Length: 314
Image 1 (tube, rainbow, N blue to C red):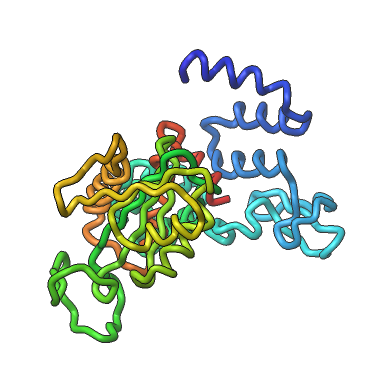
Image 2: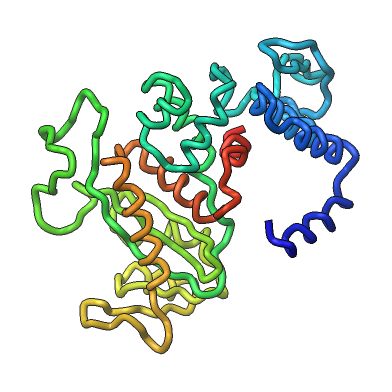
């Protein structure tokens, strides 16, 4: 950690409550323990305790079960622990969670992750999507300043599916039957990115203007400058909501217009596709989880650690 960041952290310690300070001290003292993942999760729970069923803060301790503290809610009268209501609930082999989270940080294949954590391939698949469950919908509330927008297309995949509807199986890495890009044979991903690095992406059901507007309206700030290609959907949205819009006509060799460009979002798209290649095809059904995974890597940077992965899932 850099000196200035460490100093800023020290300054914020005074704003912690007594419970949060105790939880932080416990977390620092638990490093390297045999059940580090559970100790970390319970420490985070103690900093902001609430019932996993009804979110009530009125509860009492109710013994231990499976090496975890158990509680009973005074409102719904149900028992719970720190994992109740999270994607990690009911998962076994907790001793291997941190090893598996490290595999998520490194972005290795399911087989390599299974080998690292000493679990079977089916368990590796289930753990990956449990730990990524909360990442799929984690996006910034608003994109501000100069907001770049563009679409990218990925060939639809039914990888892992035992029943295909509407087409015959094709070899992995195959090509679309018809030339051009469409949502019939491709997953269309709308990617939005501002100059602060905040990124949002959405899988579009079709290329209709109303579909674009439904995704752009909640995320693009009213005082932003929207920079995109010359697709009419962007211009219509900007006109309707009185947002300044710059259209880049790449088909005519234009890449910069009065200093505005979409090179940042294009660079992100290139990094995303290059990263996805290591998985040798991602099923369309699970593509949102992988998009959220990549956003987390870009958003957190060096802070994207095994503990961070577990914290996001819990």
